[in-house]
Amino acid sequence: MGFFGNLFKSGKSADSPLKWDMHNHILFGIDDGSKSLDYSLLMAERFVRNGYHKIIATPHIMSDYYPNNRQIIEERLNLLRIALKEKEIPLEVEAAAEYYMDEFFLEKVRSKEQLMVFNGNHILVETSFMNRPVFFKQLFFELRTLGLSPILAHPERYIYFQEKYDEIEEIVQSGVKMQINLLSLTGYYSPGAKKLAQWLIKNGYYDFLGTDAHSTDHLDLIQEVYKTKLFESIDFDKVENTK
Image (cartoon, rainbow, N blue to C red):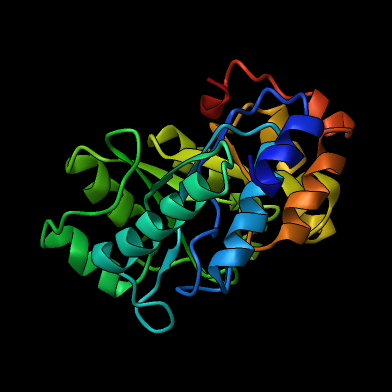
């Protein structure tokens, strides 16, 4: 048994209702997350310590900055899987993507390109933090028309949503699922993001809780999230990544 195997044998993992993560940047060298395979392994160790058995890696696909595609993502995924097995790290890893909602993504949708999804038809999308795209609602409609189930990543972090509760309700009622970042519950990103996360939780507007981990620092802070009253107030029967 190697170093990591001994680590897991003697270490304690967190007691958390969250068993798998569907938003993180563990795949190395292709976006603003992990920069090396060794660092990805350190992140994997943190996931296990936080109680996770499985993760869905979701690297950015953003035309201007991170022009990733299925081939690039799956190559990194395979390398990580091999390394996890060699190091005896008990973490299952699959891959999808975090799609940036711009005109290039709209073109992919309209051309019926095979998009990277998880659990059959779930697709993770994000927007600019400051401004939502003019085709925001239309793009969600077109995704659903294709039989996909869109999940809006970290809605609490979007400045254009803060204090615009009616607009969020409209999106939720249209069938879009919501994924809250765990670190938002501690105020890590901003007081405004925490306030909106509180409102989303109070009103039951959440379907997934994601780490959005870009680093080991993010994953180390998850332990503090588990101790918050806001985390304890969540109805985990509503959360899809608990089973």
